[in-house]
Image (tube, rainbow, N blue to C red; front, top):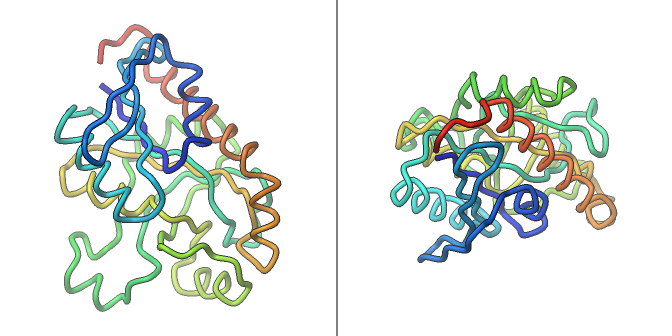
Length: 225
């Protein structure tokens, strides 16, 4: 079985529409659908916004369904000045942007930096050769200021910022489940971020979902979950 986790319904819609005969499942901390996608059994779950929701849902998915791989798909704000609206980022690594480096180093597993599975990430890049590869920075606040954007680039060399990815990665890493994270740019994480987000949210969510579905197809049609 493959797990797909998104934060919001809009990020799940296009994945769900590609699934065969999805049936709803709902458990504490987990709301989603089980179905077939390109020959694989898939659990597609909506975790909710923020790190705690993402971690809770990811652990529930892993404990309940024991997936062979976890994909996290959604939208993000661009931190790198090289990125524009609807560009796509695959995580090489993910970290928390709202926790000090000392705290991460002293108290978190893997020093607070979670490395995406190279094989799964390669599938995402095969599905969309123009995907950018780098660090994704996760925190509970929406980034909408040029100053914060510059800090994230300076401190983490981050490509983009979002609100769930490192928490999904953290739980997967602790459970030793391979994972990959894909994000499409909805805004530039600057003073215009809120307006841009409203304009590009749906297109960015669709782009990320379409690439993810193609990556799952590339895993091999007909493989049993």
